[in-house]
Length: 196
Image (cartoon, rainbow, N blue to C red; front, side, top):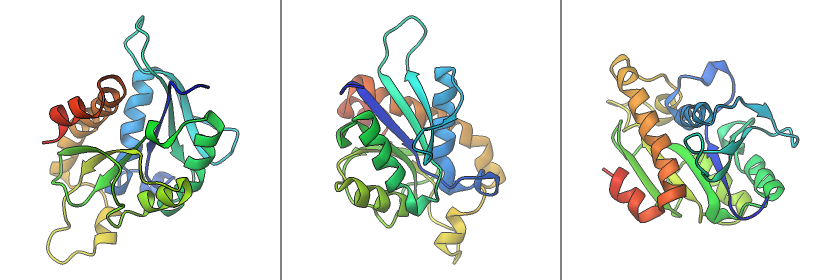
């Protein structure tokens, strides 16, 4: 594949026990993108991730070539599978988009950016370590801070509240739209549209 390919990584933890957790919003967004591409997940030959390959565009239009990926390891081991896929598909860091939960942003809001630190996020830390750079795009889905004195780790590894579950599909759709916008319209226009 050539440099017109994007690698879109949904960060999360594998398996049904984690499926509804706030930490897994990246998986939910990549599921939405996979459904837009009309494709199902399959194991990549590296054995370290599930992928969907294709074009992300309305039927009959030439959208960007995309590899959606969900690492099969836990969040704090995401970097290895991402690096393996980036190498396999020859995707440079500046064409990688990581979708992840963000504590410092209110629930149901998004921020899109290029580069930056990992802000204590184990998935981002692992990706930066394996890629040797933090210069990839991030679609940050806000989950807010835990209420009261709840431990941060317990909070991110817990299910959304009943009220949040009603709003979650809209956040997931917006995040998926933001990924599409990044690839077609670039960072500045995407930030103007989605960074609330």
